[in-house]
Image (cartoon, rainbow, N blue to C red; front, side):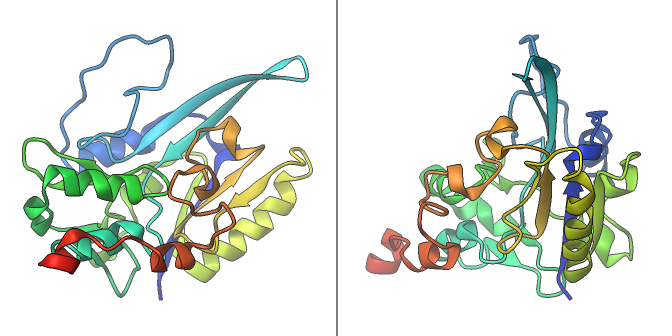
Length: 246
């Protein structure tokens, strides 16, 4: 049965334990940054940062409100990145049949920089990043190695507040709906994000755009969400040149 995360942002304190745990488990190097006037660090996902806790501050009804968003790959049910990659290098992006995880393999090294850019642009959530040193595409892999050993993803294991949850997809969907009912009592605009399309299901306390531009597929430039379903978007993707001429 496919697996899924349920991320309850109403419980997130931005401790960044998940972010650090992800980096440590995957043995990823630190990212050199500068003080930018924000606690969010680094400023964006990169080839050595698969998980990033985003900080957003707003004044609402005269009060300062903080919104925290543990960003990661959504592991789409029908992944645009895989659709694009398949047209260039078969097997560069695969979907694990048991868990539903979208995995970037060593074959992604065979993709050109322009092709990698195309894959990133196709992602409704602006997640994949290319490692300029190795040429590989990088992102969250749902801790597939831990799952194969009977363990839960490291970010979930580390989370001290119950923000991060993981299990069978149907179980996580049910937990999301049950939690939403409770959260709406204090946050009437709370909602579940893109649950029909992804395996990383977020609960947000307010309008998604208050968190980050790419919280939902609706705000992406791919066309997904602008009167178009994900499946229709995938069906209408322009075929890469290799499919036509290769």
